[in-house]
Length: 210
Image 1 (cartoon, rainbow, N blue to C red):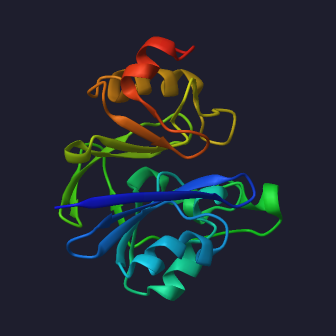
Image 2 (image 1 turned 30 degrees about the vertical axis):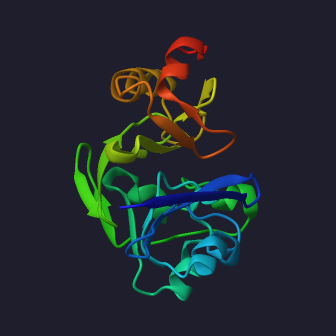
């Protein structure tokens, strides 16, 4: 099967939102949803694909503030997040929406996933890797077949995510990245929640935290 990845940076802090389309079945998955729903869905609409799932890496406002707009356009889409992150999705203080925007967000998901759980979507096996540290239950999504890792605000090009927000833990973040992400194949492409993509091999030798 053939797959195509597209992304854009949207919302108040330019969050990367990804669309992965199976070009044979015309099904798609979205990863994170920030800004305005029409921006997030622009590529999937132009392609004629149907989004079947929205994978959320964590519950901070800048990764979830377009969820309801996406749902209104595609009511059958399945919104998925790590099981330990549900509390952040529903709490405006923990998801930072109240403090940063003054508009509290409380969003329910359709499904939760756990660490080391495999899910099947658009013809792909997606391995769920929980990496606490930026938040209590941040989830990374690894697609071995495509050598892709969607990791939210966990590992960045040359850096790591902040740990000074509620439920953050800097020591745990560094330990979990080292053990759970840097052990992936070096040619795995890393698609973070902000800024440019990177790969595991590059971060193993050049990231200042490891």
